[in-house]
Length: 330
Image 1 (cartoon, rainbow, N blue to C red):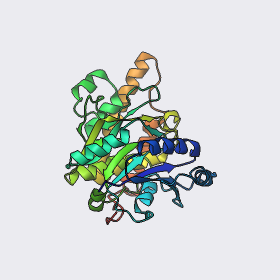
Image 2: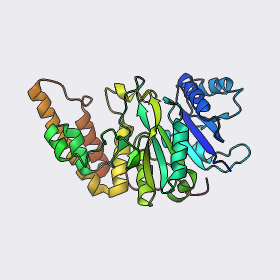
Image 3: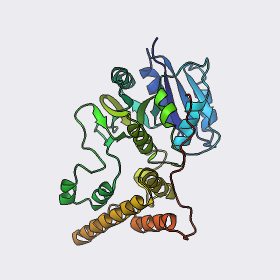
Image 4: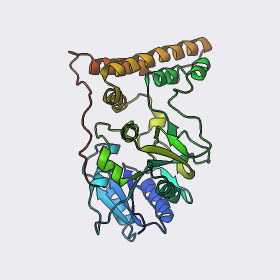
């Protein structure tokens, strides 16, 4: 019996792009048993109605309204848990961004890789930009040293800490990694019954990092698949490429990840390392007569956010290891 792939594409006020992504995916799903679910995350801008009308004559596509904008993880959880027509057994879940467009053979390559590598529970694509240039897709788990290296952005520091840097160099072949960008990620459905779904405390960012971390902790491998190539427009819904000020949910997600995986003391040390690296970067920029690469006020935001969250008596909630959504059959 052929494996069944359930594709989830989450929409937030980008219905035309979501439909374009759906059409590209529908073409790549030819010959693969499965269904595409377009999830509107309570856009309230006519997206849901637009997608319903546009997909009316697409029998392998359904449109579902999540009913609330709980973020990336919550939206995809809704799709994972929602009953499918005919109640097929789902073997694989394919998470795809609305600004991600699978190239020829991309989905089949992920499926084939997981079918032939039983130790792998998650597999992700090589993302490329619209000009075909590879994007950084493969990452190491965040750590104190990766925070310092990434914030300092200084050649000698990066060379010294290259094995701890968050971002892998572009990999030449398929291999296990710590975690992968969630823009094109295929997951064995049965592992979610063991490790749980996306943690909905992450509104945006770090949710796939956390999911991969839980998988690896449970003995499941995460694989980068070089032959699966997906064009990724990048940050269309969130506008991250144009941030003038980092939104609070990014700081919330970052801190929650460190506290959940390593504890509050480690999270505080990671923030201190980031601040130290950031000060080195700013000193170098001042000497070179150029502005820092971070948005204005970023370090002040980071310090204030984490102090308010971690220090007792500061009047703000303290992030902690909150449970992931209930485990169960998918």
